[in-house]
Length: 107
Ligand SMILES: [Zn+2]
Image (cartoon, rainbow, N blue to C red; front, side, top):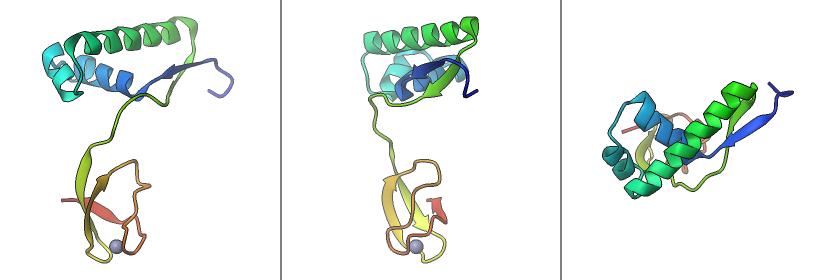
């Protein structure tokens, strides 16, 4: 993969593909979920599909990076110390603010 040319996909482009093409949600619902207007959603989706088509046809790798988005806040609880907080969940890099362990669950 490291020797392939890359096509950079923004996070919101992947989200548009996930909602519309994977979950088969209606455009209206997708736009609402992403907090954008319908024309904006349509534009993001069109760009995303074009990038994926380009990568397929040209044998390029897709890299997901950047974009204009914010992560949803979740209620979390540390399984080590029981501390509860509200925060974003990004992979498993999120750590408990009290004991700095990354052994937590969404509540
Ligand atoms: Zn903790």
